[in-house]
Image (tube, rainbow, N blue to C red; front, side, top):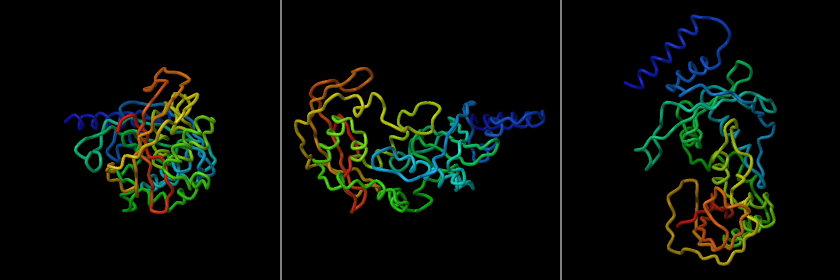
Length: 305
């Protein structure tokens, strides 16, 4: 009943605004557009400028911005839009928190999660739109994930677009899991963000695009200022021990994974708004291969097993 009343109110607002004539009302137009797919915004949100990159390739030494645009363009095409035509152009974007929620996937399907809608406009014209499930995983406004549209795992779609090859880093790709962990902390000690990025899996990099994203942007372009990567003055690895009894969680986007208990002596630049403290710390690294032929990459870093 509550959902029905929301839609009635939105429809009435659109009707009254249409009858009153006057200037183009972007929020009214967005409500009408989202209503076609069964969604409604919680409240009006401001548009902000976004420059669509002209090159959608990615590198091993930075955030995968090209992956973001290739992904959301693929999902926009599910409803008839093609963002590629606007490469290199500055357009307008808005992110709406929606009244509706969507169920999770797999074991999480019994729960519902918040959803955002993203709309791109060039002038008054919509040029792309998609959903963000739980403020991270993108899907189309028809509620189709990439896996749904391709009938294959997400990592297969990533590989088919050449992103795994573009992430290749000869110096890092030949490392063992233990050497990879040392390389990660070596990058922190040197302040070499490119080296740090090259040790991380494409899953991690994809998540980083969305995690703790500030208002007024579509994606993050760097590590957070209080992250371990940027907030560490020095880190000395004391020990790395593999958990030989580790049982990986089933994940269609991971071919193989291992867990390591890593003890590190860390000196932080600041202890404000962080979960760790300077001194001896223990981390649990999951190191994985995306495919059989992929190099080892860091899949996650936690403070508990």
